[in-house]
Every structure is written in structure tokens, then in C-alpha cells.
Length: 246
Image 1 (cartoon, helix red, strand yellow):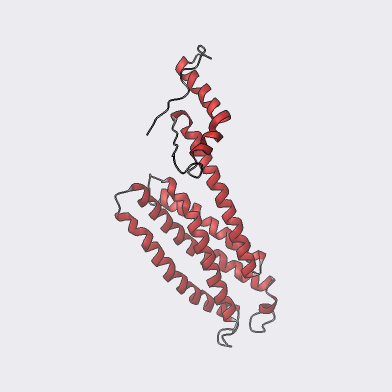
Image 2 (cartoon, one colour):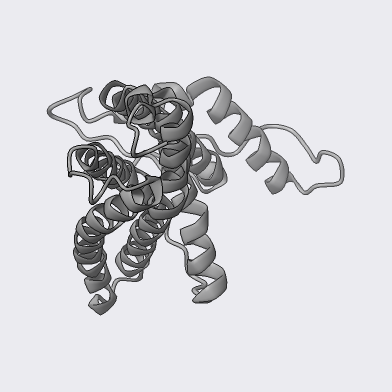
């Protein structure tokens, strides 16, 4: 195990009223980020060498490295959102329903954050919490499929269900809502088990993830249900042709 120190001191005097240590730190940070940061990351990549592991640390660039990691994760999240959105379009056959479905999935994050920070007054917000977006993308898409399957099945449930649109959607609401409530409740309970851990990071993530799943259920049963009614009236030609569902 070897530690190599790099970069200090730099030649030069004071700058703009700062002392020399601050000036050196700023100049070295600019040098690292502009000239060698990409090279250091390449060397530190575990795939670069099977024999030597390289790690780097510099207090002055912690914030910049953290922002870089967040941006890369954000790109991954955007890519995941795009892929899930296309998958929704492919399975539902409707850009309208897919768009509102993705909107309700994404809205689960800020609404869960509101509950977390404003309602429950939890001050510690772990960086791990943002991974909840990947969880809700999967669960949210599954909830959409469950709701639409119940909607499509309702068209074949006989005259007692197809009395009118209100009766039909009431049947859909109860059937899909019950199924999603059970699965959402069990998943929320699993994440809430992290409340018993002494690790604040894990506890914060578990609480946030459970709230995100809860809000996804609320949004799919409200916003997406409304979108389905609009879809029935405006775009669903087969449903519109049903005499019992004008």
C-alpha cells in the first residue's frame, strides 16, 4: 500500500487579497479539474488494472466530484425514464396514457419529499434517497398495467358492469385498487423495516422509498384514473362504440 502526495506548494504570491494557501488551493483545484481529473478517473477505474487499485482524495474537489457523480446519475435516471416511457407506449398503445402515466410516476418523488420534509419534519435526507426514482419507475409502470388490464377486462364483464361509464370505472377502481393496495402496502412495509436499523442513511432511504410508493399509489388512483376516463371518452374507439358506455 502506497500513498503519493501531489501538487503542493505552488509558486507565486498572494492574489486578490487572499492568503497564499487559499490562492494555491484554488489554482490547484482548477489544474486538477481541467487537466488531470479525467486521467485520474481512468486510472482509478477498477477495470483499468487487475493488479493495482488506485484511489484519490482531495478536499478542494469534493464538491465538484459530488456534482459530477450527481450529473452522471441524473443522465442514467433520464435514460431509465425514457426507456420506461417507450415501454409504456409499446404496451398500452397510447401516447396519451403513457404520458400521464409517466407524469404520475415522476410526481411521486416531489410529493413524497413534501411528506418526508414538511409533514414528518425529517431533517436528514440521505443521498441514497434519489435511488427511489428507479424503484418507482418499475412499480409505477406495473401499477399502470394493472389498472389498464382491469379497465380492458371490464369491457367483457357483462351488462351489470357496463350499465354506464360510472359503474364500469367503479368496478375498475375496486378491482385494480385492491390489487395495487395489497402490493403497495407490502412493499411499503418492507422498506419501513429499515426504521429499526441504526444506520441513518439506510433508515432515511427506507422511509423515503416507502413514501414514494405510497404517493405513486395515490397518483395512479387519482390522476391516472382520470386520464383513463378522458382516454375512454376521446380516444378509445372500441370503448366509445360500446352502447352501455357512452
